[in-house]
Image (cartoon, rainbow, N blue to C red; front, side, top):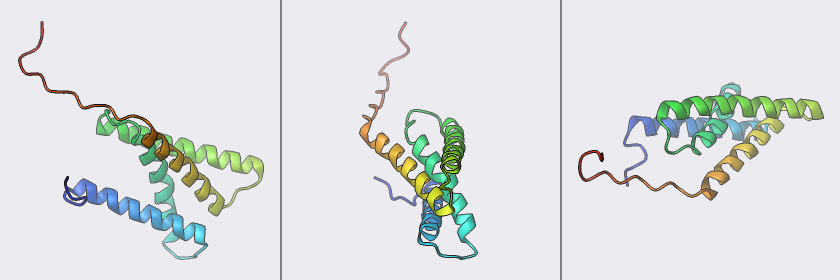
Length: 127
C-alpha cells in the first residue's frame, strides 16, 4: 500500500480534506475568523461531491468529478431550500445538515459491496 502523500493528487485531496474539515469545525464551533467563510465553502463544495463520487468506483476521473460537482450543488441547494422553508436556516445548521447528508452517502458507500477488479485476458480478443 502506498503512502497517502506519494502522489500530487493525493496531497491535493488531503489538503482539501483538511481545509474543508477546518471550515466545518470553525463554523460549527462559532469561531469568527477571516478564513472561516472560504474554508466553509470548501467544505460545502467538497464534502457532498467527494461522498457522491466515492459511490462510482468504476467510472473515469472526469466522470466522477462532473458527478461530484453536480451532486454538491444539488445537495447544497436542497438543504438550503428545505431549511428556508422550515425557517431553520443558519450557517451552522446548514453545515451540520450537509455534513449529515455527506456522512449518509459515505455510509452508503461502506455498505455497498465493492466491485471485483476485472482479470486481464490471457490471449488476444475472443472472436
